[in-house]
Image (tube, rainbow, N blue to C red; front, side):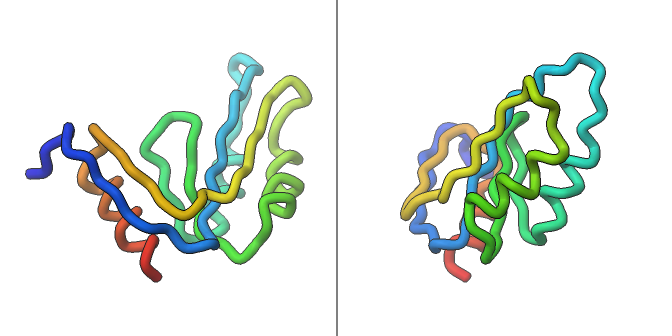
Amino acid sequence: MENNNQLIKGEMPSNLYMICYDLNAPNQNYNLLYDAIRSYGAWWHHLDSLWIIKTQSTATEIRDNLRQFIDSNDSLLVTHFGSSWASAGMPKKATEWLRKNAYQ
């Protein structure tokens, strides 16, 4: 069993993007947004409002696609995930996905 306090690090490729959002409409159904994010193929979702996807699309293309699924008072951020990552307290399944997809 992995120690949840262990720091995990890895190098990332250039095709991972982080999607963060604040969904502000109470009782709104955001299943279409979640389905659209999953449609990119390889995805990681272990924090409430954060996803990491592996795609050849650009941040702008991802944003433009996803904004149709959020309300005008919601916030959306899509950013290139950068060249490295580090985590602490994440489940083993979460860090395994990052390790697997970071080197492909």
